[in-house]
Amino acid sequence: MSSSGNSGGSRRRTATRLLLTLGVVVAGSGVVMGTTFATFTDTTSAGPQTIATGKLLLAVGPTNDTGTAANAIAPGDTVSREVDLNSTGSTIAAATITMQITPTTSTLLDSDATNGLQISVLSCSAAWTRHAGPPLTYTCSGTQNTVLASTPLKTLTSTATALPGLSSLNPGGQDYLVMQFTLPSAAPGNMGLLGTACSGTAGGTATTENLEGCSDALTYTFQTTQRAGTNQ
Image 1 (cartoon, rainbow, N blue to C red):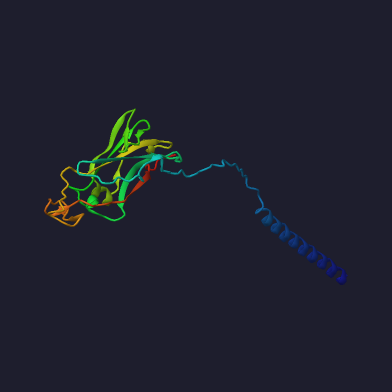
Image 2 (image 1 turned 45 degrees about the horizontal axis):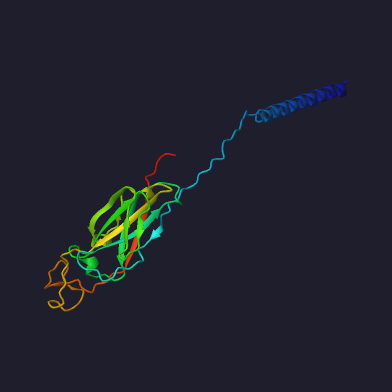
């Protein structure tokens, strides 16, 4: 009787432990299931968008007579040379086009603002008619405009000067330009008073300055600058 009673108690304790163990497993399973709920998502796309930079290209031509020399000029003479500009390779507009002139070796022709060379720039709406001469001259069959009024060559050797209103500011633009160099009629030169050619003090007189025998080799530099940034 005593043995049977102990056996029954043992089975009850075993059943109790099984139930407790099962409860732990179920509780543990509930924790795991709580971290695997799904999240709703969606995905879409746009594009591709192409973004490319533009370019500025300024070229000389089709006519470029700047390599044609002018010799034995005298006070009061004017030397004309055509140099065309174009922006046929550009894809964006420019804000400015400037010109600077650099002498290979500086002389009184480019360092004297008063008695040295004076330059002006003319444009024609059509290609200039070229007269080989000599002297080399041009006539405009379209509308002629002054791009740069008479300015001392000295100014352009030290500062890049804007050429306003050119068609080359816009992509595909073409400009027909004539550079005119004039030696002032009052430019002094007297070998009897000042025996050394191309010497003396800039802005002087026949006793202090002699522009005889001067020679300049000039290089033109044209520079274009892009328009201001904008929304695209």
